[in-house]
Length: 247
Ligand code: SF4
Image 1 (tube, rainbow, N blue to C red):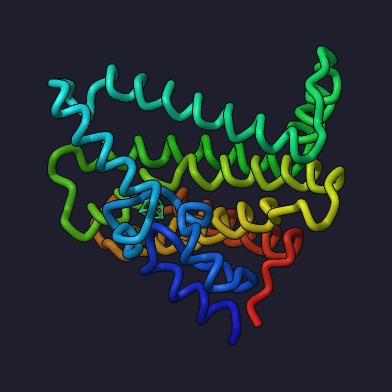
Image 2 (cartoon, rainbow, N blue to C red):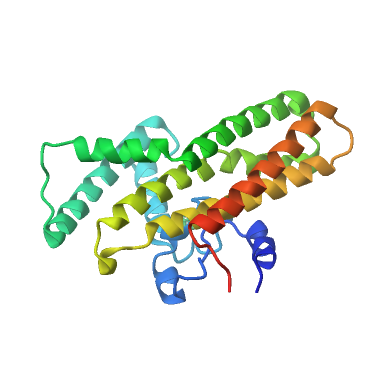
C-alpha cells in the first residue's frame, strides 16, 4: 500500500493510531503510547487505562468538591502523576543498573545536540509561523468564522505545537537509543516521528480545506499556500530520516 493511501486514513483518525511496525497486541494493550491525547475523538477510550484513570480522578475531584477543570485539580493530578513516574523510574533504573550522578554535563550535551539539529530548527520556525497564522485567521474571521473553517481551525489549534514537540522527542530518543541495548529500546524515536508525521498530514489537510474557502484575504491565502508546501517537505524529511515506510 502506498503512503498517499495511508495519509487519507490518517486524516480521519484521531486519538490513538497504530504505527504499521507495532504489533496489534502491543497497540491495543498500550494505545496511550501511540496517541495525540485528543481523547474525545479517540475510538479506543473504552479500553484505554489512561483515559479510564482520568475519568476516575475527575469523579474523585467532584466528590471532594473540586472542579476537575480547575488549576487546583490540574496541580494535584500532576503531583500524583510525578510521584507515580518517579516510582516507575526508580524501578526501571534498578532493573537497568543505572545510577544517578551529580554530573549534568551528559544531559547538557544531549540538549545541545538536539537544539543544533537542523530538523529541530525548521520545526520550531514552522511551529511559530503556524501559531501566528492561526492567530491571523482567528482575527480575520472573529466571531463570524464560517462553519467550513471551524473544523480545520480546530485541527490547526490542536496540532500546531504537538508536531514540533514530537519531533523534539524523536530526535532526543534517537540519541538515547544509541546508548541502549537493542532489547531495551522501545523505538520511541520512530513512534514519536510517526505521531508527528500523522499530525502534519492533518495540518496539511486543514490548510487545504481553508484554502478551498473562496471569500477571503489574498495575502492570507498566499501565506497558507507557502506553509502548505513547507509542511509537505517536512513530512518527506520525517519519512526519510525515521524510515516511516508503509509497505
Ligand atoms: S483515550 Fe487514551 S489512547 Fe485515546 S487519546 Fe486518550 S489517552 Fe490516548
